[in-house]
Length: 198
Ligand code: FES
Image (cartoon, rainbow, N blue to C red; front, side, top):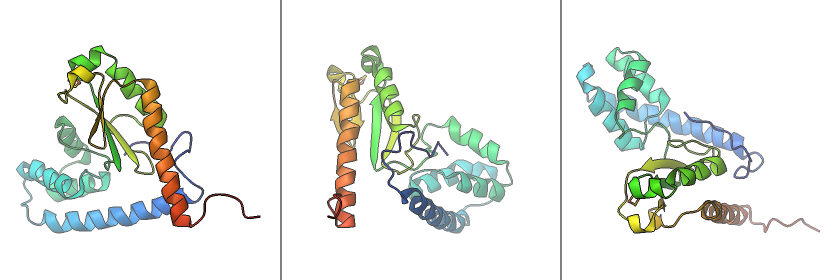
């Protein structure tokens, strides 16, 4: 699991961290119940490892560490062996996808035009590395191969929308836009406009 701390704390409100921990625990328990149930559809042969991992990813969009341990026990393998196989294939994720998935293109045209710098900017701004998800599950970042818009290089795909001619200031703007949206949503839920009562 990737780092869970947001370095600037800007997406976490007071008390939100604990609520999220509880929610995450409940969620992982539900995932493990589901995995335990569906494991029974597979024989305990090591050759079933990939189909089992695909089943978990298909049902839950990623492979939680606890589920990997469960699969290892089921097949009589060490967890590190299961990890070794899973990490060999690009198709598997080890963190839950963020609400706003960010894909930074590092195809040739984007690479030449500074795609790595854009990726680093997203990583630094969000406090995560590629392949990881922020603590509040708002964002995940990954690198992808050419998305077919080379004329707009460097390109990032944010929430399935192609963002061309990316620059560090644009990274900042995208994150800030989502941050403002989240704060508005939160204020709506709290039923306040965030101003102090007189
Ligand atoms: S290389 Fe990035 S869109 Fe083609």
